[in-house]
Image (cartoon, rainbow, N blue to C red; front, side, top):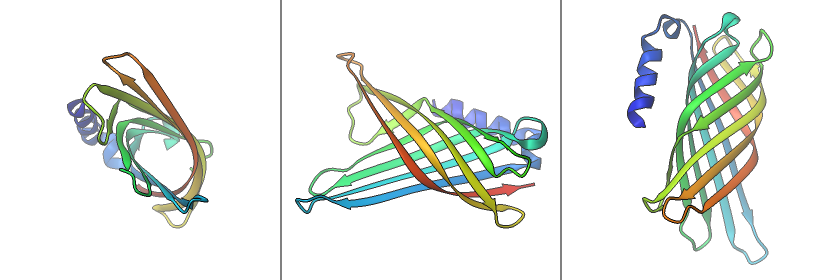
Length: 174
């Protein structure tokens, strides 16, 4: 799977379009809460999208998406995932400020998970990014993220999903 994703990135990098426009879009979520029993729960999620336009007027972007999540509770072993897959960003206006995104992650690595657990995930979101200067945008988005796990030995499936507000930073180069 890593070879497929690396090949896809190299093909994008060698295309003429990629040399003209490149986007780096990073989104972050952080939450820390304390329960009544004084235990703490910390959740972190980060997204990185590297893409290039694939349609007229540079409103549709295609590229690679990386998600890293981490969840840590007091006195427990934390859990985390690394997810990699393709993503589409579609900008609803010519100024490229309102966006809709869809991502699918066929490669998911879950920390401390046995080898017989396989997983995949997807994400969908909407957001707004305000133009700060020619190349830099900052904004916010709401992202729905679903993770599907399967035990290859017992065929049991486990699904989890979250809806999170994210802070976005976008660097766009021409």
